[in-house]
Image (cartoon, rainbow, N blue to C red):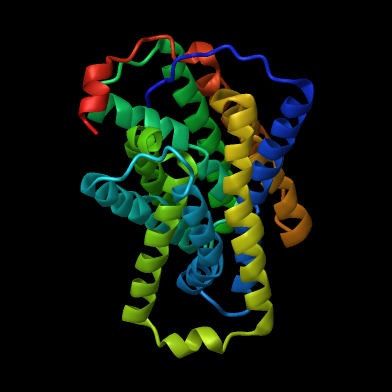
Length: 322
């Protein structure tokens, strides 16, 4: 993952407070989608139905966002290569990743799901090493080791308490994390050309199309119209408050705080899920899980500190591979 050049900017106090609030709210809301999925599963729906409803209900919002962003003055026209990359990114980042995530949630508690997904920064770093020949500082390797040690602690504890299905569910969530890491690793150059909000809006439209095609190949579309009413209400909350709003909140936070500070505040997501899962779903919190969560967050904080990326990236190799 390429480290952007550091630019020192003085942010007004009020703008900084708004940015901190947006970043924190975005992290918590995005993580809460796992809680809503767990509630929906109680009504007999599965991962594909949860994902399809989420994507269809959020689609009008992302279409409106895409139209708004495309009409901004000074936008660079997109090339065929840009459009092709958006299709790939939409399939990787919001179709496959979400599908594996919701499928895995059928088998694992939300606390473990969020910790595994929180390995995204480490996957992006490793992709940079093997695909883009990025050099990694010693502190980054230490952060990787700490993060994986924390996940291992929580994984072993859940395996002991809940049984072998944790293996399958954790594997699915791990695939979700890897898919999203590929999306992040491939999107850097495109974001600078297309813009973050326009890229997200277009990618979500592609992901919705892929999800709907998947559903139509496997299911009767009439099934989506015959689900229990609470499923639709939960899906609408998921689409607005755990999909669309977190995306826009995070972009607003980046504009006010910079990417580094906004990324560090994302640690609030998995922390909130540990307690939300216990409160709303009755999931047990053990001492080992709390220790593992603290270890993972410590590793991610090491990774997201500006000083962690101390080895310069060879720009010609990193950008040439994309």
